[in-house]
Every structure is written in C-alpha cells, then in structure tokens.
Length: 386
Image 1 (cartoon, helix red, strand yellow):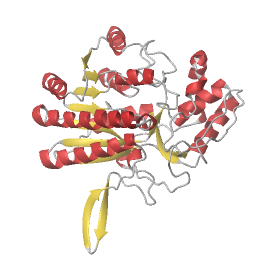
Image 2 (cartoon, one colour; image 1 turned 60 degrees about the vertical axis):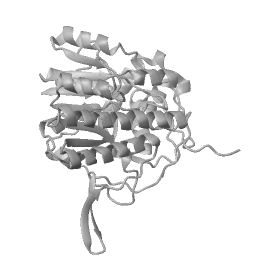
Image 3 (cartoon, helix red, strand yellow; image 1 turned 180 degrees about the vertical axis):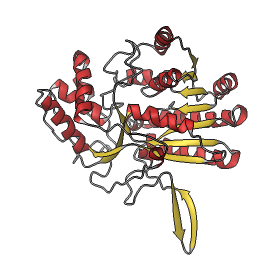
Image 4 (cartoon, helix red, strand yellow; image 1 turned 90 degrees about the horizontal axis):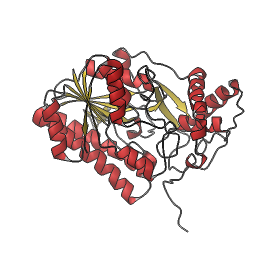
C-alpha cells in the first residue's frame, strides 16, 4: 500500500512510519514541525533529545535500505495539501497532524484559536484533497476518547440508536468535550461524517485513549530512531509525569481527588490498531468509529501502580494530591464500549508494574535532563476573579 502519514515527526507519527515501512509499504510523511516550535514556546522539551525528522529518515534508510518520502509543509495551506495528494496518490492516509494538547489549547485566546484553526482547517483540507485526487483512499483519523467527556451512560463506539416519541434513529453519540482541543476533534468528526455521507468517502475515526510507552520494536533498532517522551504539564500524560516524578524524588501528584477515569493503551497497540484499520478499511460512504483503548484506570490507580513499581526498584515514592487545574468531574461513571478492534484481532498489551519499571529504567538513563519546574500545572481552565 501507499501510506501517507500526516504528523510524521510526532510521538505516534514517527513510530507508525517505521512500522509500515518495515512491513513493506511505500511510506510518505508530512510535517511542518509546529510541535517542536510549540514545545520551545511553552518550555516543554522531550526528556530525550530528538534528532531531526530528516536525520531519522536517513538513519532508517542506512539501517533497512527502505526509503521514507518526506513532504515539509502545513496542512492549513490548501495548495500544499493538494500537491501532496496529487504527487503521492495514497491508498491510506493516517492523520496524526494536529495540535494534541488540552492544556495548550486552554492557555488563552491565541492558543485556542491556533489549535482550532490548525486542527479543523487542516482536516478540512485533507478531506477536500481526498475528494479531488484520492476518492477511493481510506482515511484513518486520530480522534480522542475525550470527545465524549464522562456521560452518565455507557459510551458506545461513535454511534447510538435513539428512540424518541415513538420513532427511532441512529445518530452520532453525544459529545461533551473538556477543552478547546477536544472540541476541535469533535468538529473534525462532524466534518468527516458529513464528507462520508455527501461525497462517499471512507473514514475510520479512532477515538483513542491515553497512550503510554517509550519504545517499539523499530525505535530500538538503532540510536537516533527514538520517539518523543514528554513529562511536562502541557504535552506530557499523567503516567509519564508520575514516572518522572518518582525517578526525580518528587511526590507523585494526581490532580484533585484522582477519581478521574480514562481509557489507556500501549504505543505498541496503537500501531497495531492503525494497521488493523488499514487492513480492514471502511466501506465507501462509511464513517466508522472505533474506541481505541485497552484498559480503564483512574488517576489514583495510575499513581499507585507507579508508586508500587518504584518501590520494587528501591525508590520511595510518595503520592500527594494537588489542586485540579482543570474543570472536570473527579468522581464519575465511566463505561466505554471497545469491541470492534478486538473483533479485528487486536491482542492487547496490558499495563503492569513490569512495563512501568522498564519506563522508569529508561527515564533513569536520562535523569540529568529532568526539569522539575515544567512538571507541575501551569495552565488553569478557569481563573478566579480577584
């Protein structure tokens, strides 16, 4: 297959590019390197310094003999996107090319607008280019479980059947996102469903949980092939932050009561989920939604797993709750359905203390790079008036 990966310099994009290249597909990546710019602007550098995308592609070619084609440009620029599609003619498009952080989108007016323009307009340009030059291609779009929020009913996979006043219909599942970033993903989903319904495109929307893990088989093949690992308050996830805090001798800090529940999955499972979606494409005119996660944990449960794993490594980590900077339910019902990827053959890698210990061992190798001041929350959802 000819596989086009949007956001190929990112945490998921680069491992995905190597994964599909190693499997024998013809791979091209697109990136404008905005993520690296945003990291510099908010002081959120990855724990392990990253070579440029160009250098990683060169290392990959020297190691495997396989070429990954690169297009440098912005998805917000319609003519650039059109040229990429016309030149590469993809069979599958894997779309990671969006601003990925809820806290970043909540910094203020400018960042909220930047997030929504980057994500929504970029996604629109992608589907217009598909319509023009690759109408039979399959778009695998990275969404987020955060689109749903935490409703007091079971979360179905994208769609729900409603009975109302004696009539029945199948509708997109109601969304209640928790940030301007999550809102941008909701807008994407609505635009994609419309494009499938009106233009007969084929799309799989992967509503992904929180991804954890540093390494895949490909990132371990040679120095320089690693992906990014963020532990800061803007781009880092709770599990990453907790592991770094334990290694640095800092308290593990769940936000608020710590009862917030979310879906989680290993980065290795992300790659497999995307592969399964490409191998089993949506039908023409179908907007298909998969809830992409393997386990559900509360923030408190994550903190306890990290604390216990640290103890086995001789690290005495303490848990200390801090004021929640977000406006969210801290004690809530959470039962999302996730059947479709399992039906297609996903064999989940479950989170365990062993994996957490391996993550912390990697962090210990780069302990000198830890910047304590970028871990605690710097962005609040609602500033109190003085």
